[in-house]
Length: 457
Image 1 (cartoon, rainbow, N blue to C red):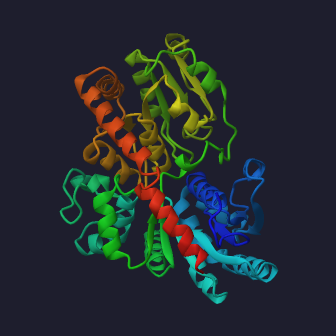
Image 2 (cartoon, rainbow, N blue to C red):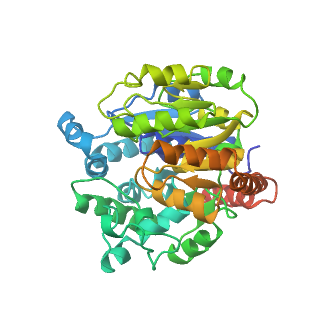
Image 3 (cartoon, rainbow, N blue to C red):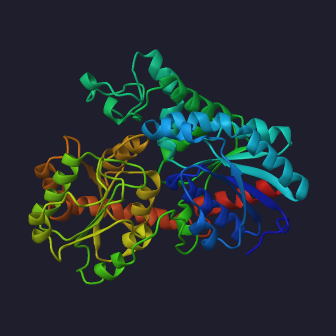
C-alpha cells in the first residue's frame, strides 16, 4: 500500500555488483517500491558479471548501466586480490558515476535521494555535488560493522587485524568481546594500505551520510544496535530481514538448479544437511575431499552446492572418487547452484552448513535452520562467532577440515542432546524474526520511519 507523499518520487540505487551485495540492495529496492517509490538501479558493468537474470526478474525497475572504469589489466591483477579491486573501483568509477548522476538528475526532477552500498564510499562526494541526500545500506551485520569501525583501535593495541596472527589465534580480544583473534575479519591481500583505505572510507562516509539502513532487526543484535547509535550520529533504520518483507524473488547472478527442490521432496522432515559456501569462497582440493568424506561418513542425506570455481584448480566435481559417488548414491545430491531461500524453507532440511555470509545467516535464522559454521573470509568470522557463541544456534568447525571433525559436527547437530537445544534456541530466534515484521514490530516501525524520512527530502 502506497504511503501519502511518496507517489512520483524516484530513488536511485547503486549496488556493489557482487552477489552478496546486490541481493540485499535489490531486496531493499523492492521493499521501497512496494511503498510507492519509483526505482532506478545503476549497475556498474564490466565488473566480471552479467545482469540478464536481474533485468528479467525486476521488470518494475528502471536500469541504468555505467562503465566501472576497470581495464582488463586491472581485473587480471585483482584475480588474486579482490580487496585491491574494491580500492580501484572506488577510484576509477568516479567520473562514470558522476556523469550518470548528472544525466539522471537532469532527466528526472522527482529523484529524491541516492541509496548506495556502504563500501562505495566515493558516492558521498558525488551525491553532494548534485545536492542529493545519500543513504547508506550496510549489507552485513551490525556486529561486524562495529569491528570494522574499531580497526584503528586494534592497530593501536598492536593487533594485526584482517591479516591473521597465527600464534595468538585463540586469545581473547579484550577491547571487543566476545571475539578472539581468530574471529576478527580476515582478508587475503597484498596491499594492506588499500584495504584499510576502503574500510576507513566506508566508516567515515557512512557517518557523514544522511542515514544508515540495516538488514537486521533490533532483537537479533540489540547490544550492537545500542552501541552503533552511540558511535554513528545519523538516523539508523534496522528494517530487516529484507527478504521476509515479500515473497521469494531471485536476484541470483547464476542459474539455479530446481532439481534441488524435487530431490528434497523425496526426503523425510529435518533429515537433510544443506551445504553451500556462497558465491565467492574458494577451497583447496584436500579440504574438498575431506568435506566429501565427512558427509559420506555421517550417513545423513545431503544437498551440496559445488559452485564452478569453488575448488582451486578444478572445474567442478571431477576430483570426487568413484568410491565416494557409489557410497552416497541416492543419499547425496550435488548441484552447481540452488534456490537457497526455497531450500532453507523446505521441511526436509534440518541443518545448513554455511560460510556465514550475512544473507545466508539471516535466511537460515528466518527459516529456523541450525547452522554448521565454516567462515572463509571477511565478516564471516564475526558472524560465525555470533551464531555459535552469542545466539548459540549453531556449531563452528574450528580445528581444520578433517572428516572426523565434520562427522562429529553433523552428529552433534542432527542427533545429540546439544543439537536439540540448539534447534530450540533457533526456533525462538525465528519467532523473533517473524514478530519484528508484524504491525507494531521493531522493523515494521523502523520501515515506517524510513519511508517518512525519505519522503521529507
